[in-house]
Image (cartoon, rainbow, N blue to C red; front, side, top):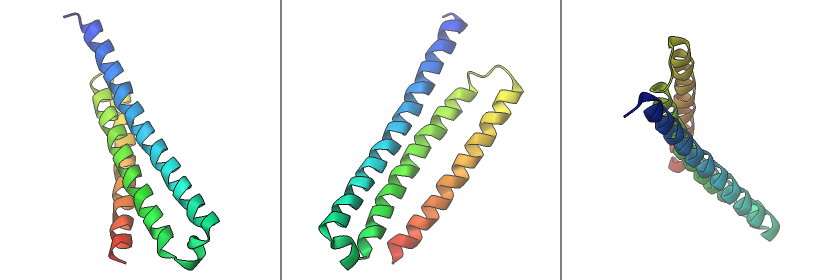
Length: 114
């Protein structure tokens, strides 16, 4: 198999995984927004404060899942980069996203214990 064809296939796989992550995050944001608006307009939001925590938990879990897909896409992307600068840049992005996922996960754990 030609290396150019293999590289092109890997780029398509990377973009596909990244698109899945973006769709997961977008669907979670839409779901959480619709839940918030439902509770807000039905008056349940003011009477029951735990609704906000439930919405935050749902959104946080979806954000973590979406970020994991995007990190996976970045890891696939490291196989398609030709130089060390691009690999270093991708490594920094992966570290930032991993720290973000970790901090969201810690907040979710504290919310779920309440």
